Image 1 (tube, rainbow, N blue to C red):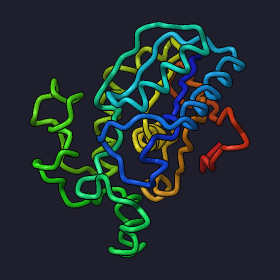
Image 2 (cartoon, rainbow, N blue to C red; image 1 turned 90 degrees about the vertical axis):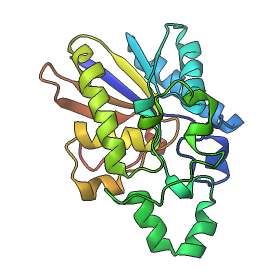
Image 3 (cartoon, rainbow, N blue to C red; image 1 turned 90 degrees about the horizontal axis):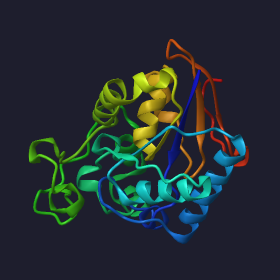
Length: 237
């Protein structure tokens, strides 16, 4: 039996501004740092030894993980993987969600945010917000950098990485992943066997560790948020 702990990064600067962030590399707010500290303390109280750590390439997830590791007094190197990045929101990137809903209509914005396979319009490669123009992605081959993504696109890259790089460690290792709302939603869809309609309703709160107990056949035996006061409905369990 192994434990898989999924942590959405603490509140970011653009979370606070209610902007579509996607692949833009923004840092945590002071509140986000406090959320990460609380996550670390909750994991410490659970008394689970973490063998392997993963994060996306993005600063807000990396810094959340570093704060958690500091609380755990565990400075192991962690694996940074672009496959765990947030979903790319295309031409919505950088826009305020409320203002965009007023302009395009709430239903259209909800469709972009929660639908399974609808992509927003592509973000221009000339935009300074395009990942091709952001330094942390300089080492990525240009052909794998998206202009926009649906949740389905995000799911496919996340689950391919899970199957190829993470899954086999869960036979005897405890793993913690610091990532993003949509990359964690993708993993939950796969691990909890959620359908396309259920995944649209799944909310992932910032800085609240979601702990899954995985058996030897890679089935989820239990699943819960460690901070029950901020827990969201998991649809199962």
